[in-house]
Length: 446
Ligand code: HEC
Image 1 (cartoon, helix red, strand yellow):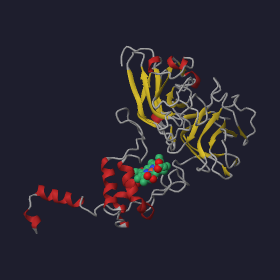
Image 2 (spheres, protein in one colour; image 1 turned 90 degrees about the vertical axis):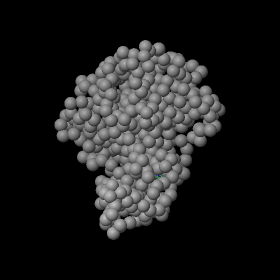
Image 3 (cartoon, rainbow, N blue to C red; image 1 turned 180 degrees about the vertical axis):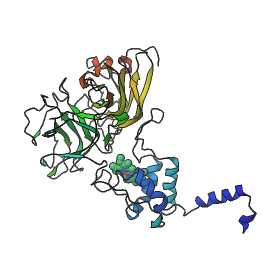
Image 4 (cartoon, rainbow, N blue to C red; image 1 turned 90 degrees about the horizontal axis):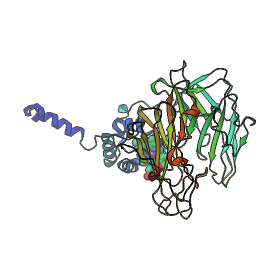
């Protein structure tokens, strides 16, 4: 009745107030769509997160924890500094979504009406892509109950009768509890790397020759918690796997206290036609092979540099460090002297995230690509295995790395081994610390 006498603008306000009034936020109507879009990729059975958020009964006990996690921006995990770069896979929630989740928890986490719920998402046997082709390790790897397990390398026959163009890849552990991270390499016919390996057998100490010049070995798929599937179809690009290639699964396992097994697999989405551009994932440069992190230093700087030997576009950035890694910046210094920060963000060892640039960056020949990292080698770093140690480059987690995986879009004719060469600080002999920004050649502009 009253409403009849209210002016139209005021009824609008009344309606708005009602839609935000207590008890209006329900799981089925407002919360589930947010969980589907932002959380269920990890929070479902068989994925990296410890609990499922598929249904009301599964999510209800976590309402308070969800409120805390989204308010603190702990979930979804995302470490890029918003000041720099835009990313296609940006996982941050909108403020509106955060408010909805908080209101739901504050109002006692009601279910609402199941009729309001969106249909459940469908997942294809746990895959986050729809693979056209699945390649599995031929047999189980047997893990010992304890002790350090060196990196394992297993050659897996490809049996590809024709060239493959791959637009997306997802590596999935058979046993997520023990696979810390993994990579699947393409070994083209004629490559000398692991040429005599018996297919299916696990070998150690095979790092040498993996990225040998001219051998064409390339990373096809990767696994680490939170990374998800990898897409290569940026601007119509795809990854190239020559006919007759084999694959090598590189696996870093952690023992779990009892003997167990793993059999990991790789799913691939294939392009129908050969694409105009090739997507290459580079892991060689810029790298801080000469890094020195002094004992106890809570903010040790290490700078690495590489110079581009040809034009390409930069599409993907995934910093890589170990237990002492703290933050990372990728800076481009163009031949003109102009500088641009393509990525800057916190680094968290438990989340080796990758960042897909919303718009690939054109990188002309002669550009210096600079990686600037900081490490925490103090006792305050809860991951630090030994703050009294001077740390150098090495493969195990108690050694360090300062590197980055770069996804590049190149000309079909480009040689993957002639894209970047180490320069500047990366050419210096190992010192007592660093190398730091002080070792950079000065530029005309910043
Ligand atoms: C990339 C994978 C991933 C995504 C996306 C993700 N989570 Fe998580 N979540 C995890 C993992 C792994 C853990 C356990 C490790 C940890 O707490 O860091 C976790 C832990 C949590 C916890 C427990 C935190 C605690 O303090 O114990 C909550 C609550 C949570 N997630 C909620 C969410 C919500 C809500 C979303 C979506 C808005 C989300 N997560 C998105 C992987 C993910």
